[in-house]
Image 1 (cartoon, helix red, strand yellow):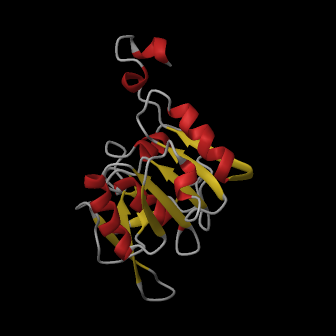
Image 2 (cartoon, rainbow, N blue to C red):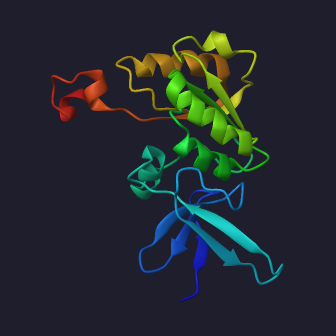
Length: 199
């Protein structure tokens, strides 16, 4: 069966792999390399006779992919965007955002945990548009020498005051008319209340 990949109708830089089960994919910035053993698919380009490699973006492993599959209205990211990513962890989703923004874009990936940060730094060695920052997102002034004004903040810091943390960062780094995407885990805000109440 022929593999067909089509651009996502709403999000430039995101693609849909058509097949038995449709899948969300990003164009691999580093063909031949997987980041976390994700499935890779190569598609022949008829005009150039070259292959384009895509990486499957699993919505069960990435909140941003889940948001796209779930019908989120806007992610404020496209090829060429500059993204401040708070709560980068080991960089699985960051690597897909790096694919999405492409070589003209950049992902400033902030992670506090040194252990996760090691994986993030290793991933960034191959993806030169990822700038790993091992720092506390609660103190955005600590990385002001590394981060320019950005188009969007993606916040996934799992802290009870993460809206405040997003605000501090947005104040320093988001361009006029820039956007943000926040991933809120109810149990991180208050684990004693049911999620519906927290939201």
